[in-house]
Length: 387
Ligand code: CAA
Image (cartoon, rainbow, N blue to C red; front, side):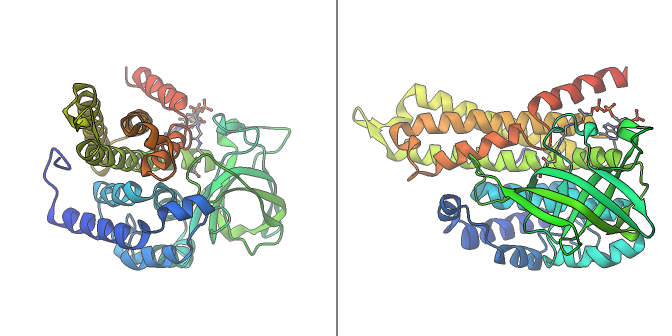
């Protein structure tokens, strides 16, 4: 099956090949064991940094590759097709903390963080959600109070991808005072490094999928953050987060497409080799119809994603398109992996075959960086915003 409806540029083909070869050589042989053992492989961060995969959207002056959004998403899909846990590490790092520092950071912050982040010396994370503020992110309650040349943060953060391995975490906290709450306009974004006094990694979650990507809670107990680590305007952290999630959701869509494509490829190969009733099961219409619908949905999700990426690079607002791309791709991943397990039959339910992991990994793409319900809210609101 051809990869895309439009031809890839020479640079895109090269990066796709590089990502595919890296994923097959360095990740594929270990992916099942890392999933089984909940093992995050720290050496991957350095290796991926050396190849440029951790600074894909950063300009060359910060040691980034400076590629366009589609090229980044092409690489991400290749990694996700082999291991969605590694892909989420790469997506969060590129789309959220590095892009936020590049877009909203001071020259000093860019100088301090971006080159090491692009090189894979510092991994990035993003901490918005809290135990009582998931979909309703503006209701977060972690408090930041200015004290001399520092901000003092108190609160807890939930479900932080890369949270236990990151060297720079963008933490959102309220900067408005308890007597004069300003809602979404009363939140700041802080660059937190794990060496700061008062920072602690809390519970490591035991998850259904993405088991090789550690997800943790963070405890901020009188965490003292130097004033120089505040990102941009102290009241705009929520807005920065929403703008960045518009881009982050493209990354999650690419991850979902990688998962779905992998399930399709495994199913196509299996249907050729598996024989029942005297012939390969691909000869049965029941299987052909499934494979056809799987292939159509993967191609449609990819086309929508890359149209959204092109719109972003043209400078258009992509709030609605990124929500559509993430929603469609994540529901595609869940649907396609469900069909894949069915095609594999009894074997599909066993951990010996890859579709079982793909099915588990697909689910969270409908949940994190905004649930499918939140994406529908964003899409519907934009319909009225445009009219
Ligand atoms: N771009 C720019 N500004 C935006 C924006 C966007 N995409 N979305 C909202 N805003 C602005 C609004 O214009 C508004 O500004 P004003 O104050 O000027 O009016 C302000 O933000 C508040 O917006 P809303 O009134 O729409 O806020 P809300 O609370 O009603 O709803 C929401 C916002 C869309 C539901 C939002 O809370 C949301 O996206 N929730 C989901 C949270 C989420 O995605 N969490 C992801 C966690 S991170 C993660 O999963 C990463 C990981 O580790 C894998």
